Length: 289
Image (cartoon, rainbow, N blue to C red; front, side, top):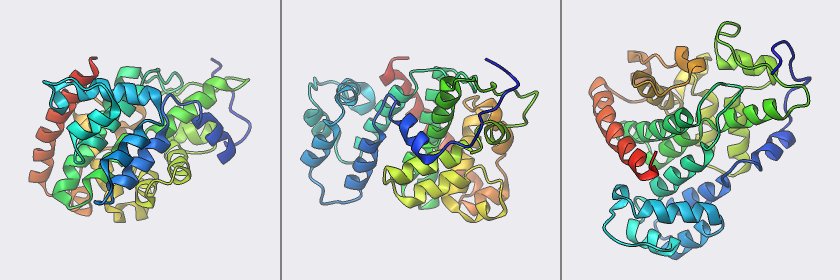
């Protein structure tokens, strides 16, 4: 790839949506599922019907539902059986794990992020956000979705860079201090904003897109958004165990100010590490890689 050219203009929402349609997973399914799970009166049959919209995702869900992470010790052959066996409380985690597995099938070449690191960061960030949310008295499902999906914008910009007639310059730590500066110089937009645009289009809860837009906590008002700060702390946890991206590492320092802004205390952070490691290892085993 060339190292001295930039794309001629910022990506338009239309171009972002076009690229998003090439992702290996239909995230609108996850959006609808999140909506269904917010209603305690939702029937399990409605959830099953939603999952059947994506054949490839359904197949992965069936495979995962037979793993020890979701009970094991039985034979599940259909999405309906998976939903009934796993239950209302765990279905989002089942679908989220399957989604992460599909979205992380390819290396992000422009960012120099391997497929394995991408998957590890998505899963670890989701489990960490979920664990922290319980202590902060936030909605764990919302936090889980935010942690899982925050990197979607990186996938879009990577595809934009690789798919452009004149290839975009690769990210280089020696040339740009972080991904934010590189993204704005090359694409005219930050990946966190791209994610926010997509999640709004897919009708995820507005609190998720707001939090992801601000989760780097680089602007003065960002610290006033508890979920955004919680995501930042969750990624600080990922960095501590070498599951973060090199172009973001300077953004994840865990400070007393951030913990307080997220409604957390030091002991909450330590407990979340234990819970996250347990969930992450189970997901790794379930995915088989």
